Length: 181
Image (cartoon, rainbow, N blue to C red; front, side, top):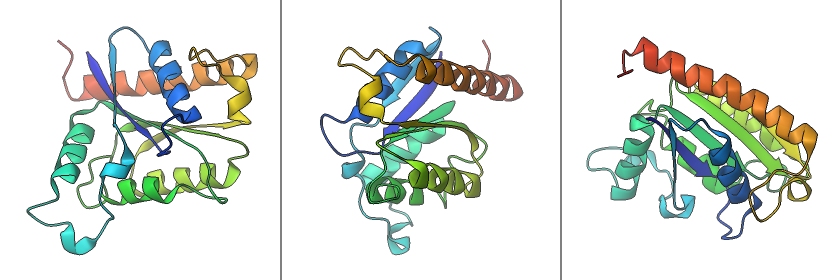
């Protein structure tokens, strides 16, 4: 099994982004396991003075999940013309560990507009050396239902394309690391 670790950029319990994470999970091949971070709110504010041993326990668990993952899924809204601060915070905790470096990251902005957060997330992931597979889904609430079905044909086609490329990257990374059974 290939392990994908999903991070929702929203702290809202009934987030549209959680719907998209579940929908994407259903679209992944059967040999892919999707594990979702319960909440980004559980990670403390990034502080370089705390980025030493011993790390906060929640940060240790978070970094371990990323390090063991074959790929990362980030699905987030845009807040106030940018990334949610909580998501930026979690990504800051990955910088010194380089845990996302060289990993495929399917990065989905599912929001009303989303252009600013979209570019910001691409920029951040590029700086931390991720292999980025970005997708912007504007007016996201209107394109998915409560049963995790994407109801907009164009969005579903775009998502399939990005998922296909992401899956290929995960498989390449596994092959490169000789991790195939």
